[in-house]
Image (cartoon, rainbow, N blue to C red; front, side, top):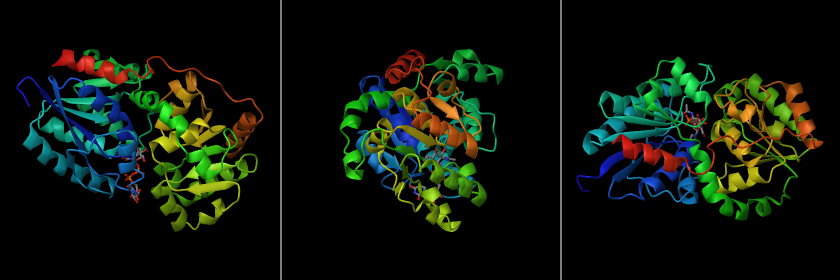
Length: 368
Ligand code: UD1
């Protein structure tokens, strides 16, 4: 490393982080005389199909450091990550730490960097659903208030941050970096063999993802949702790549049989390319994920979101997203509309164009 190179530690830990970090790392590496990026993986996600498969699919280099933290309660996981990251940051003395999204690894790294007085950048700042029952909302608010540079993906974020008193000089509307990954991989996604492997025809099925703690950690809520989905599956087959949290809960609550149905295909989680290919060819998607609301909007695939609110309102206002909460009648009637050809259509939001990482790096070049 020469004295002109700025050392930047990028911290990732969970599946959605990898999709957001890949384009930024690639862009930073285009300027080896200016930046020396290091990648730290906390190990919040560790299963191959939630972690290493994403590194392979997105061609992310092996992390410079793997903290191997694993699962635990919120406090346990966050605290262990903080201890691990503190060691790394003290040893490396970077000039900037970059965190992504809203997972526990994001918050843990943000607190640690701030207390070591290392400047912090947050990619995907300012999203709010004003629902503190979601751990992600707490992670988002706290991380934004610690960050020195805030990169926003949609305009709603600017108003949210302004209301919270965050100086607008720190905030940059750069667009959605997840969409950079989608644009960069679209050819590979179109060739991914997942449909052949599952024996599916394009547009003949719906894709389901379900893992939000609010939806899966209480037996009655999960049972009701699964029974609604089984009813939707009577009109169109459903493919359900099932997150380990949900698999665990379904077993624990004795609900595995509700999905034991010839119209629902329960699978292990897919890697990035296979999953995007599955979505790209779906008639519609049922989800409680944050990022999938955005990916479906970009791909023009109708999305029914099983949440009462969204921190990504542009996907509803401009995109293909419809919020259904856990309302059985609403989910069934919205699914029926799509199957009968009355799906909501949408447009691609401003700056979701595959060039967000370039805009971030330009801001960083000026900032240093
Ligand atoms: C985390 C994020 C969530 C994000 C999701 C993407 C937080 C608070 N939540 O939720 O915002 O949408 O990742 O997937 O950070 N497990 C495994 N293998 C793994 C990882 C987890 O089996 O590799 C199981 C463990 O039983 C674990 C549970 O899943 O206790 C939950 O994992 P955790 O990382 O705490 O939260 P997610 O539900 O994955």
